[in-house]
Image (tube, helix red, strand yellow):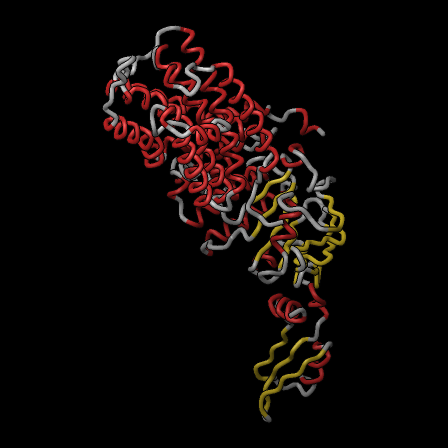
Length: 275
Length: 271
């Protein structure tokens, strides 16, 4: 996926102001950002749901604004909020959607993958919020997509279901599926994503692996300790030397900690700059 | 490129959509009851009020009314249900989901046509049964009459369904679509001599206007099927005008489908 200078204006207001992204085949890429940062708009343009105002976009080698059915057979989209197919059962709707694709997954296998075996004959409208989201995921992967769009997929999941969901995503990635994920949960991005980009004010303000985002790996560390004179805190780019220096006397330092900014700290710094 | 080779056909997906739509529809008990009972209720109540017998032919006003109401019933299950149904699909995410799949747009419409054809035929059958039991409307036996029924039904349902889709795209919400289609439908029912029989009792100007729209022709066509030959004298022209009926209904089919293509929207997104 290649995005260059993507813009989207609604009348006079610019929601996406020149986004560049490169997502490689087979990777899990997470798009982070506060509400209103342009995440959903960006993703909907990449999915072919919205027209763009400017810029170049290639997804699986095609322009999503013009691509047809053959291209749509290669992508999978997990919707954020849908209440369709209410009167059908889980198994019926999966079997139905499987018919649209040239090489679909087995609907029964997909039911198992998302953990809805017990609900396979339940009407869709009787599902709980979390179960409904799992069905949305199931419908997104039924066509065996090469590229999967997941827009805030685990909102409303309980922690256990969320872990199971992560395992499913890792499984899909292991099969070679490219995954574009938007999320509010930084632990989710850290656990799943090979690379992340932070979107704020319609621009990419940082991009990298979760471990190095925003210069996180090389950022100043905070060293804290206590001694006879009280508690100390010092920020330093070279914490190892500092600790060496402090412990030169051979004494034990009370309450010694060395911390680097968490992904959350980095993220908040990044979006704070843009506010 | 390989994906192109084995993609399922538009028609087969369309028929699968039809089965899907029928299941969705018939499992919603309240919608089913409401859809079918409203025109029936109107026919039974008003038909019972119209007690006159026309002295020159011996026909009863209720028979004229019931025959026209069958047409109105079909329009209600095609135009009104389609207008609301597509608006609902847009609001609840159905269309957005479909837009993200390789399903061709044509298959979606084939599915809707299957739904509308089945529900309209069921509506006509229910109303004809009740009309023949209550008002002595005779079920025709000649093949010509049924042939007329077939083409009036096919052209009417296609045109009205297409107009329903177009109407749904003009509305911003399901409520808007429901109110809009019902108002248009009610006004045309009145002005087309469905609720007031015979149509000759209406002012000429009103009928001249309503003659541009399909409701009048649909109901006139069905009166020609369910009423004896001499009832033609209660039409504006004093005859059934089947040629003109075919012409107007066909024109609305073409116009409806063009309008449909022109204004159909997948989402309520502002662009």
